[in-house]
Length: 367
Image (cartoon, rainbow, N blue to C red):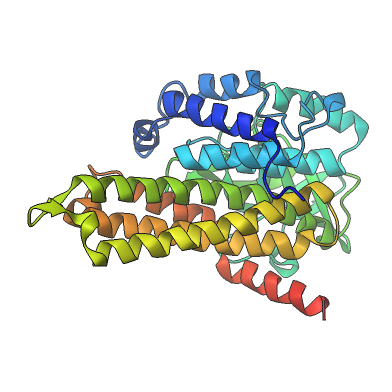
């Protein structure tokens, strides 16, 4: 049995790392903290031209049909580079929802444009702080109109279409919303990592099209499971980058006439991070396999991967700051970029408690 990615996927990962090292250096993530840097739209279109935005979409929908492995290795590369673009929210969540639950006409209207980088999509589930839960959805869909409030919505300010979770009678529905249309007011929401901007959407009888395939909260839960796997890979990539930055600094910084990496206090910290990253890698790889199979194993595998990858990224980001010492806490140094992104990814799709509870629930169903 082969426990590694295919040769094609490894080649894609290496190419993505090289491309992003040139086009999305840490300076780009830093610039995004204060304002959207010029060139982000061009980078998004370049990613589309490389086939990244449609990697997981069927060829019939304008995608590349490369499967789960390609999506995961791309998410890992983008996480490693801290690229300030909405790949997870727009591609792994919103586009995935359209691909799974939309009508043929809706798929034809949006998926080719999303894959080509001509339209951005967002997914609106949360209605304030807290974890995803059926009882937390108060937005209503009545006679093709949405009324309620959604926040925070990742990339909600730039999106041309938003997939909105809402109540429709006794069902939990998903609907397509034009955020620039009538009945919609949107405003930016300040977040810990401004490189991943979010919005608040206030909906007042805003016209919307229901996705006919989604009729139950279990459909949204399954969608979150599928998105959790590339989210885990993004956190894994960020954890690797933070560990690499800490190791590089520990080899360079001198104290008492020798590199600080030669002291046991630093060695032990970085060894603990390495173990956490490798554990997260094992869980993420298994979850990628489960995502490709789309079977019963996915629920537990996705939750386990999300929990372990988020924990590894937070540990790596924290110890990267500590390894850098006093300079690690400053605005001018890069460690806080990883810390911000680790916190944001940990809260995406529901916080750590939500995914730990899903892990426990999945384990209980196996006994």
